[in-house]
Length: 387
Ligand code: GLN
Image (cartoon, rainbow, N blue to C red; front, top):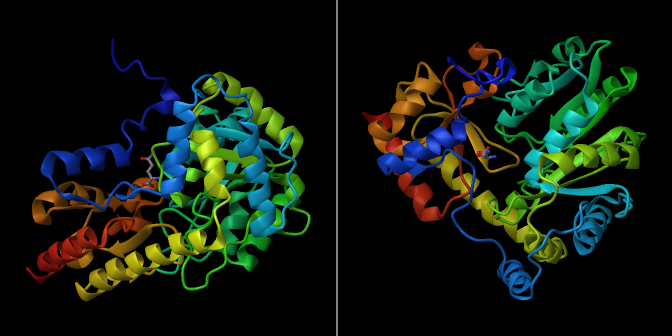
């Protein structure tokens, strides 16, 4: 019968994260591929989930999310960014940021509408744009500084642009967009009357005093911006899949209409636990970033010492390195061989790019791992470089 998959999803076979995590499992290699921490988040958050299960919060939560989480999200946006968000009409809890991205794109894009995004892009962006029958228009961020190129960004906009899908801090580059870059994106969005959908799942994971600026805080942008985040990264709970979006009430209502028929609701007992985590003190938030910054330093210094050119990230839990000194000429092929070469798994950046030449020998490594794991990975990569 041939491949039964609809044409628009062909080419999206198995995600690179699933492929590389399976490879790590089957070879016993150190997994610096898929981004997930190997230690748990705050104890009080874990206990709150256990309490929620024990106290019977195990049935469908309300469609928009449990009230204490809606309130905690609004309070978080006020506390960290001075944003005023109405928890009753301007917030929607989703199954991770992934469902928020899908609900927004599927609710805003007609077939043929264009979505402007930067490449390399997070893998679900391309797949979700394709699911909606929309068209991806990209502007490349180029190694090693990943600066926004104004000419190519302008060229990506057209009369069919429906929305800009932005991600800052940015996976996989670790870039934190500057105010000037965000202003440029915002002015192009206004010029083309486009929505800005901004994926800020790494909002708290920034280093060396870098400042994350939510697009919704820029003058005049709140009424055309939909902000997405997730508990997975901030609180080291990627398996809980509690995400959210907020924005103007009409956009949130549109996303809610679609979300009802994707999953209806999810994560009942985890929602009150995330509400508690969002209210943790500033010291807890500072602790998440500073412990990750030390891990970034450990991995980046090790990769540099091994002779690799490293683009030291200002945020996220990823670093991109040029693996040419390790013998890479095609990163996908190289990453498939890396477990055998030295017992480490990374992710080829080329799978996140339309322009394959921009990332031919680039590999993304995750540093959200225990220090002993990172130290061993660095030793193995260093030994490979020395061969
Ligand atoms: N966001 C994680 C990463 O970039 C993986 C998430 C996933 O596997 N879908 O590695």
